[in-house]
Amino acid sequence: MVLNNIRIGMTVDTTNIRKQNYKQDTITKKALRILPSYRIFKETYNFLQKSQWWTREQLEEYQLEQLNNILDHAYTNVPYYRKVFNERGLKPKDIQDFKDLQKLSFLTKDLIRDNLKDLKARNYPHKKFEYVTTGGSTGVPLGFYYEKAVSRAKEWAFMKTQWDRVGYNFRDKCAVLKGYVVNSVTDYRFWEPSFFGRWLVFSSYHMTDENLPIYIKKIRQFKPKFIQAFPSIITILAGYMKKHNILPFDSVKAILCGSENMYPGQRELIEDAFQCKLYTWYGHAERVVLGGECEKSKSYHLFPEYGITELIGENEKPVRGEREVGMIVGTGFTNYCMPLIRYKTDDLGVHTNKKCDCHREYPLLKNVEGRWLQEFIITKNDRLISITALNMHSDVFDNVKQFQFYQDKKGEVFLNIVRGENYTTADTEYIKRELCKKMDDDVQLIIQFVNNIPRTIGGKYRFLIQKLPIEFGDYKYEL
Ligand SMILES: [Zn+2]
Image: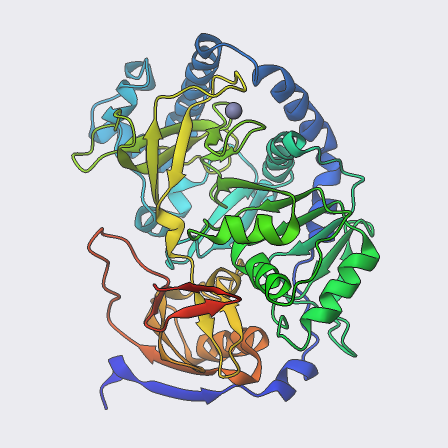
């Protein structure tokens, strides 16, 4: 038998799903985690209220100061960076401006995986490290560390500052459609309250034509002011509403969309169905770059206070021309437990030198190209499952080096896995069990082990190779 190509056929069994008392790490828990660090949130938030109106010079001065701090810290306390500096005969003082930063090598996902221990700051006690994992937008699982309580508090301050632009308040009611599994899906109850009852989190895995009227009725009853969503998931609801001429929700003032980019036509469909503003932003779990729309434009306004963003062209030099495309590389300021310096995000950004009418002197990105490959799996019964939703932020893929879904037949999907060193059959069982919960009974999942997963021509991994045309509502997308 060829070990590298074992096929494990599996038909998903729904009885399993009901039996398991599975509980996703709820948003309330995440929110509670930041309560002790409310002071950090408040300080960061208050700072951003002022700094967002600083001049370009003030912002650059601040960035250089922050860069010096993080480089000094990395050199002194983080073995990986000490090595990087030493190998190049550099000291932190040799990096005096943004151009000097190019003297340091890039950090990649592979390098993080291979040097995880050496990337941890030695001057932080064990209890300060919070382990997080992400599949990112590229299908390569990655584990790393936040500073417990601090990282999340700072992130909230930045997010709140962005959402302020569409009038979001913590007291506001939100419906949440972001790839969550809801624990208590029984008797057509596809939601559960969160964030002290202010948020209603909906299951993203039961959005069928049969169930959507129940979702719509509940949203109307709950009267949320905002809907937080993954674009692919809100699109299913929007497509259904347009197809059946369902009126928008009067209470909803804006849709807050992150984590995925939009297909052409998706924004128009969502805004048309909901008759309100769609607010989008761009960021990662790795927290090196964050930017969102403003009141005046749809370009991403990158927070200079969050980190330094470089757009790197094919020759490894920064991209400067209007509409030129480069790899988004970020150096984050908010995580001293595990600093990420010159981290390659694997996303491509479109540069612009234009200034925005909002008068913020933030660098702008016209668009992010890398995430256009957001995709769906099509089930036997024409249900669409967002691939971002399957891309679980948990430890499921910890022992997997790479994975990729492949579909060319409705209701059947292959999961190709490159096993890591510690991978065992227990991992296969765990993966099957977790994916079952999300795929329900109308997708057959076939796990295959492979030696490697080929990159695309652009050198990127794709999370799903989808050979089927995708349809929702009157909209049809060819991948
Ligand atoms: Zn603006």
